[in-house]
Image (cartoon, rainbow, N blue to C red; front, side):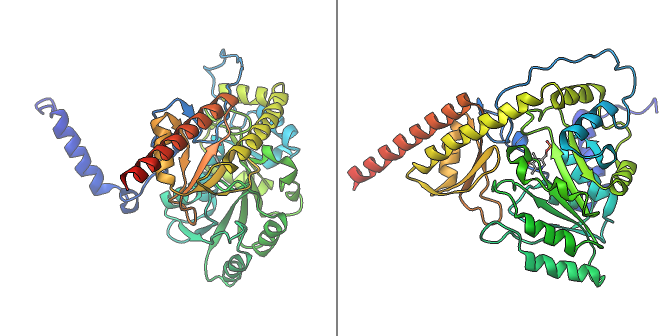
Length: 389
Ligand SMILES: *Cc1c(COP(=O)(O)O)cnc(C)c1O
């Protein structure tokens, strides 16, 4: 070893590239990672692209216990979520964001190169990405024209499952759905849960349920053994940077997931901050939700007045999806002004659709100002064209 020349950095990197290309899984080599808002856009001063809350949290924590490993599932945190969600402790698994809940479900229940999941797009991207990273097949049952479940096609899959023709293990339903914003009808969800009752889990992602708590399906947990609910502190609780989410399900499901998840998923500071947010700070969240709803109504009125608006989607969340004449030109103009929103045009059936998060009043004013500028410039361009003609 000692005679060996130390390679140049370039040689080392080339050798590593060759090695990695030779040994990495073929499907990983060609995989496109999740294009999170943070990876896609990093320059800007008005962040309305990731459905985060506008204001920050004022929280203090004790940092004197960091020499110790945390509990696998910190009691104070599980107690706090149990009290908040009115679900028994045994039916809760705390995870690093709801995203980890998705991944652990897939790793726990799906066999690589054999099993599959169902997604109902346009919807949240991580279900498919997580499945693909584990070699799990993704079946697509698109939402219908009303952005509701295609129950008939789902029934075909359920029948196939019962006849052992396919092996769907997880059906992902996002309600309220990201990025469209509306809830999935409760009767349809029940129908799907029942049709897969002996063959698959139905995972209802309630990341935005705090904005319409009366529409949660959490009270179905006591009726259906194959219902799983995903929750997060990233949206209404304004703690996206904390990375804390919850899976709610029958304890048989939770116990299996607990075999797969990392041994210490929730750090001590995360547990302390999250518990505080769920106990003493709970009224702050409720107040934030009220403010978001009122700002969303303002924003709705504003969007409805725009000459280029083609459609504005109903929302039960902290974001609005809207269809415009030319999504690329508006999106590009806004990002040049430092106002970041999300272009959803690449999603199934969402051509020329943009999604804007309901931030705080300041951020929404910046958004509105930038739109006014866009309108003025479009008007100028039009006039110039007329002069040119
Ligand atoms: C934001 C979001 C998540 C992920 O939440 P984290 O807890 O931050 O991982 C999951 N599902 C949907 C629908 C989301 O919008």
